[in-house]
Image 1 (tube, helix red, strand yellow):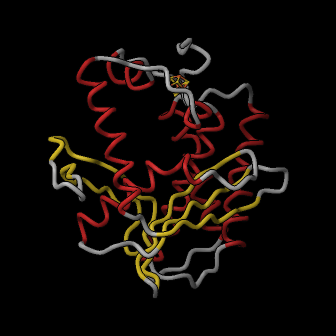
Image 2: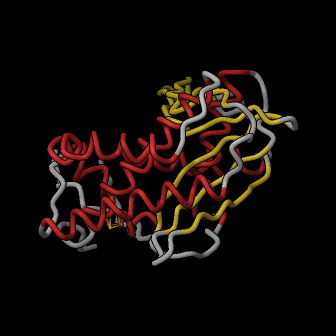
Length: 241
Ligand code: SF4
């Protein structure tokens, strides 16, 4: 249903304050790691300056809807505190990035059967680190609660990253990570680690993809409540089951 609202009906929703903070955090981490790729180490002050310098422009571009100026300033502070927590949590000498905000696109080929599903798979990986044990694919998330994410709720996304990375590089990832920047009163960062994808993961992924493509072909847009509903702009306005 979200696909239909967004891409077929063309309904646009203003960026919520929470999503806006997530976008600014992502942009700051992208800035950090693009510099690390070049061997340049940025400090917290550099990242906060960037957030401040791009804030107004981003508010306009995203049509972010704040209640008032005080809320906007509180969120700007929260963004800076999340970045500070990240720099404290993650060692500065972690492996050098192989790729940052890497757009990956490959034909959608089932690695088990070789079947070509006839469309491309496109994904953007936040960060890929060149660790000693092998490539580590990292996804950044901002969340309001600190709880270990259920692996199954991220399975499609993690398996897609793996599929894209393997198809493009011919290498398997050593590990996948979700780094959650948690918007608690004192912000904190949780690093959740998941093993390299197995044949069973890809088998489940392609079962879902086939079903999804069949539904799109038939114009059958189902109500599918799940983890993604927590971030869905259409939940309260358009989605009535
Ligand atoms: S609220 Fe959930 S079920 Fe409804 S459109 Fe959004 S993601 Fe789909």
